[in-house]
Length: 141
Image (cartoon, rainbow, N blue to C red; front, top):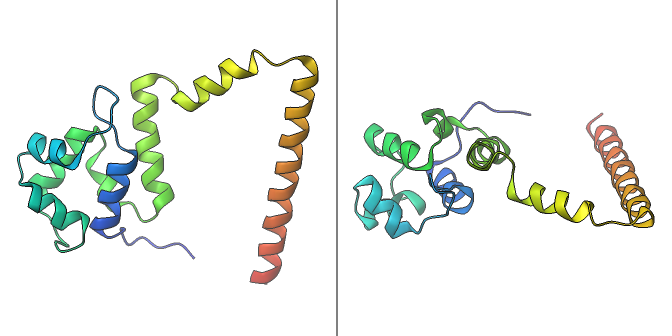
């Protein structure tokens, strides 16, 4: 069942701090974020720990600007939705996610035998994912 209710601000903030990056592509400490958006460290900690449930609009606008995400990030109903916003930010900054760049670089170094092994593993993983979905559907029926 999906919901349209946004995640609590503490979860949104935790995801921002964990996955969010600044304009230079780096993560930021709580102190750096607080200074950049012109709030006290304590105010930011209240958001993170759930003591503040409804932050002011200008605080959300400053967080959005700092992390380069749209304001509607704060309406995300799921963790996956939040991560999608934040991953898009990575893609916008780097053109490609850094993990994907690393995988691409390593894939170019594989021997033909290594390529076959990786493809076999990917096939097994896909088959496992399909079996898991089928099992979950049977439980839901």
